Each structure stands twice: as C-alpha cells, then as structure tokens.
Image (cartoon, rainbow, N blue to C red; front, side, top):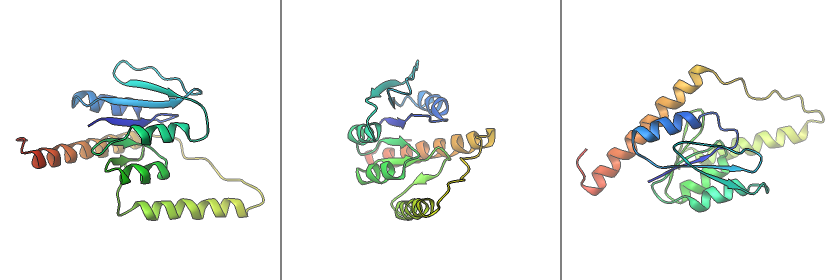
Length: 158
C-alpha cells in the first residue's frame, strides 16, 4: 500500500504526509515541471508538462489497495477501476457508487460553461482551516477503514 498524490497545486500535501508518516505508509507526490516540490518524507516524481501527463503517470503507478488523493474525477474513475481508494482534497471519498454521478456533473458543468458567451465564473472559495480539518478527519478515517479491512482479509490482528 502506498499513497499517491496528484500534487500540482494540492493544498493538503502536508496533512497527507503527516498522517502517512504516523501510519508508516509511503507517499509519492506527482507534479509537473511547473510545480517543483520538495519533501523530507515523500518521494517526489516530476513528470513532463504535457497535457494530463501527471494524471496518466499517477494512474500508471497506481495498484490495487493504494490510496490516491486527487481532485480530478477522471483520474478517480481510473484508479477505482484498478481497485484503489480515492479521496478529493475536500475529504469526499470516491466510490464506485458516486463516481458516475460526479463525472456527469462535471460534464454538465462543462456544457453550461461552453454555452455562455462570457465566462464570469468565480473560482473556488479560499481554503479555510475548517476545510483542512474536514480533509484530515476524512483521510484518517479512510486509512483506518483500509487498515481494518486489510487486517481482516489477511488474518493479521488489529
């Protein structure tokens, strides 16, 4: 098990690293050449700046049982297909039960944006301490859920 982070402009990298370190889980941060990162804990992989290059590299490294942190629903759909677990930086888990709806909402939003002649869309709201707390709680719960499930399947005592 490892944690893969789509780290280009990801606001929760430090939270992921702190929790991963506490649980002795290796972390790989993937970023393109426009977002060079450094870490004392994680392995950092810098991927070429081509369109979706980081996304495809992440999916290529992902294996069954890994945890992926991404805000990209397309990446989430692909890692779920490989048997990995996914979480958005908001703390929302990606599941086989919700991914189709998320992809449809993304598609519909894109159609609405294209239909408007002028784009006066606001960007996302500024991230708050409450957002970080919510992510940290959800991410910890995801790891705990995985660890209990893994121990049960392998017969390793909790």
